[in-house]
Image (tube, rainbow over all chains, first blue to last red; front, side, top):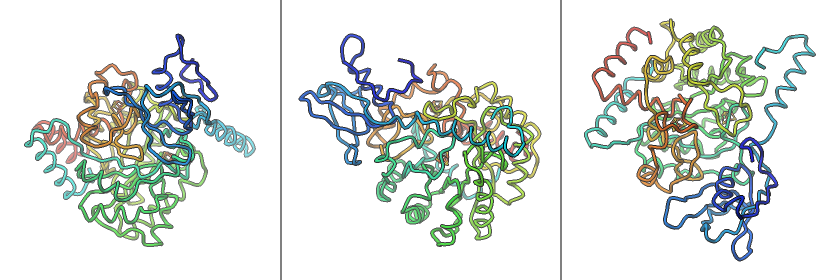
Length: 116
Length: 340
Ligand code: SF4
Ligand code: SF4
């Protein structure tokens, strides 16, 4: 998977092709809510803002959808993580603004800057 | 240089004390982010892309003050998000000023006139508004993706100066910046009467919407050399002249990310204001357990390769000034001659 691609909607199967550690890294880097599926099948939806893999018992930290937390969850207690929430870093707000700006400049008869 | 003498003295004596105490890594400026919400969505910003429940979060004033005490830096910079949207910004600033911390409140200024009218702040030598200004009207409104922001910021600067506040500007320059327009912008800011200006190249946040216009190192040196090679005497910079020389490629510094540690709703951010490689629960944990050798240009870390941002390199320049005669001499010379 390319770094520039959004992971929104990704439902990883932990196995030979992708490890739990890799999925956790992706979830930690993801700017949207995810659903953490625990070993017993319980689910927690929220934002993974931290992970610490350099301690004897690695863990992640999550604020849930209501903002409560942080909840610490051990790596060993995670079955998988689903990328269920919207990727807030994938928005096209800048591109949309540029399009609008260009449109208004053309309407007013001026030329957009070369790097616009 | 336009930093008041009392502030320079506070920083100098702090650095000397840290060195006498044998501290290898010490903070100079705490970057305190009490919230991530903002009333703008700038193209180069990687700070505000979070789900709603995170954007709704605020640090409490008590959490902020604990972080300030833990870290001990003489300067506290309050970026964000937009700090004027923080409901307790008045009380937070008041508490910091009472502790004799030099506060830089970094704001896009959209709410500044409203807060001044409501007497949320009182003028103090410890408080500066650091107004986000990325150039003249056209460049600034383009950088912040909204028309009219430049005009509002200018009005807010005038209003703050009229009331006796310290006002500085902070400017991020991206690839494609026009040196002549930037010099014109410096003139305009000095005409407005700001105390000093701060400039820095943009950092290529992986999360920022505009990925095309971040400066690579050589291009950055060329741009800053063209902007600063014959500086006007009337331009005042509220930052280290050695850092400006570094931007021009006249000095080679290594990053000291612990110099500007960041605290926000997630905790103490590793390793710096720009990268989010994890969080520590305490400042001590941050200093002791971050793998500092993995960061900075010499580390070979791709994310650091082109970075020349003030929060990593300005503390290096300030340390250089106060820890060697040569650094001190060069700073004094640049300050007296106004040349970089
Ligand atoms: S750069 Fe500052 S003003 Fe712009 S969106 Fe980010 S936090 Fe807001
Ligand atoms: S070089 Fe830049 S990105 Fe890397 S640690 Fe220093 S400030 Fe952060």
